[in-house]
Image 1 (tube, rainbow, N blue to C red):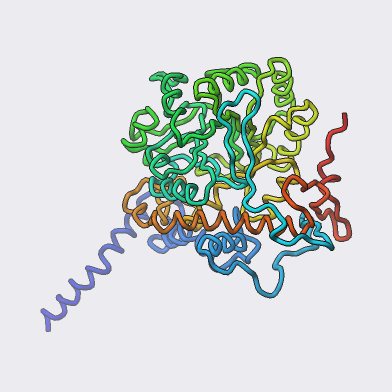
Image 2: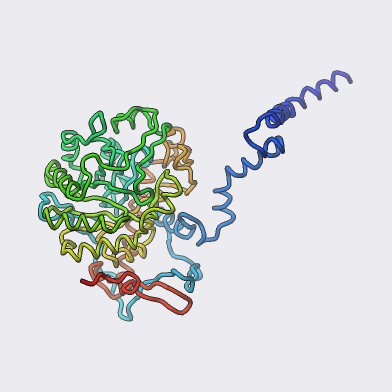
Length: 485
């Protein structure tokens, strides 16, 4: 009996001794008041907090409430990527009487789908461009290797090749995986000049020239600012800065990398345009442009004045919205700096028209593009093509786990952890990228037909309606009136 008793005590210690040790530690420590006041039990608070995003996403939010991307659009992206039925039952889930609701004005005499331009494309390349590029209406927005895994980059690049559209490299440099995928590339040059920098972080013309002449590189984009964090610069956590990434970016491995907030190659409008000209010459005449999130309108007007004075025009301008995505940025920047896309886009387009540059400078719009309607309302404001980042991430498996900045992305999209990225099957996911692109562009053509139009050039601001109140809707003509000269 005694042996049985002590045997039971010893076995119980296996269960209870760790709990006792944890409880004693919680009482001794002074860092967390909850654990100190409620030993062991208080730890449940931190456990539940860990799973809060999943609980919120799967059990609490409705179809239209979730942020940054609600379930309705997530489901749309997933079904299109899987080439499944993307129709919805029982009517709209949107409140069509809420302030901010938007819709498209259709025609009593719609076009047949075959009468509408299919797979629309836009030619990029101004008067000084020797190698113009014929781009798709919808392309992959800037996302760097380092922020995304090599499998994610491969899937995106291969999907772009299969679907015949372009893939922006992001400011993290031109990686082997961008090239291996075989897709058309827009090489983004950021403030740190990753992939074309000297040891002290300045721009290196020789390295740039060598890489820009690669066949995959179709256009060059100078990044002035990013919608999610304008004026802040990029952040690559040390946990993501592997030996491989450091080699591609020409930096020290296993250290946190902060991109400068400004360019060293220029510091004013004329300097920017001369840098555009320099990159165009070094690349053999490929289209060169710049990307910005609009902040100071006066500064953009200065660029237009400099374009007028120097007669140096960028081949394109990418307008990013303050609602754009990022893996990591302070909440003050993501929430409170930079004009939202539609305000910034309409201003840039109207300014280019005012200076008679719009016919020679293409405009790309980027910021929360998940559906054909999102594309159409940006085209109505004057965009020529549209970029999407987060929708493309979801096409390859992103579940909006909100762990992009921790290197623990459970789907292997935004991580450098090999044990996690192996779950992203490139051969399966790249087809989904192409599927999402095709079905979204097809839906765009169907909407154009419903409006009685033949192609995107005919879309005007009058075609988009915006609700201001319970009994008042206005067109984009009224909401974003064109500048009067």
